[in-house]
Image (tube, rainbow, N blue to C red; front, side, top):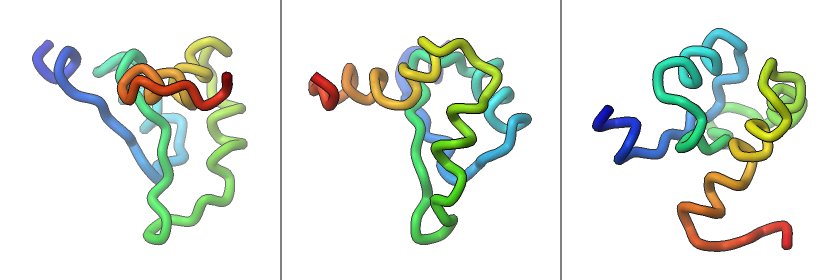
Length: 78
């Protein structure tokens, strides 16, 4: 509960469904911010992985940018 309510997490560079599912199942999606870990892990496939993830489209949008926008108080798309 404490982590879910007080932390944001960015599972950077982990482009596997089991890792994403673990994060979603344990911590939820409200504070998940999608990230990459360049230069330690390449960015190839990052967008395709998120687009193809087994998540509702609205959740993908939250993870891709809306959660970060809320955290930072900005809007990158409008």
